[in-house]
Image (tube, rainbow, N blue to C red; front, side, top):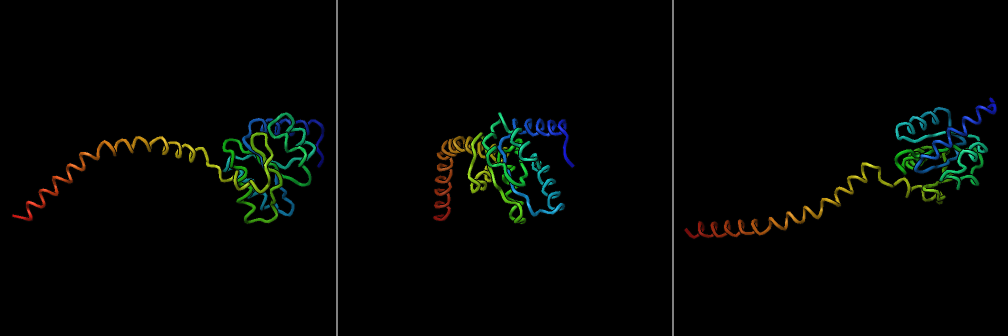
Length: 176
């Protein structure tokens, strides 16, 4: 069913709003996926916090104008599904990459982050970015390491003294 002008404007406005606040975007060709597989993909996207939408390419080109994802305009050809990561920059790439492992019909075509169009082969690199919680954990580990080392250094003389006194005690008990 064809969209009227008002519906097209609404689609462009919705996608433009999502693209303006998105961290990264992945466009993938979905030709050959069944309705059931697309339903599963959409459910996975909702769980991962990824905005997923099949949009006519002419409307998608208009929607990404003036956003960080304007670099996608020239590559929007053929049947594509757009995935925008809202909170986690690697979420869309992880979603597409993981789903494509089990479904050969889903093929990543365009990958963009921060206004830069990446090679399609870089989807793995983008997908391997840590989530917010993982990055926070890594930061805490780095911040905690110097304090732990300081505490171990300060405690070591007392521990060494205790081991020395225990060794003298054991040797005296062995002589007696």
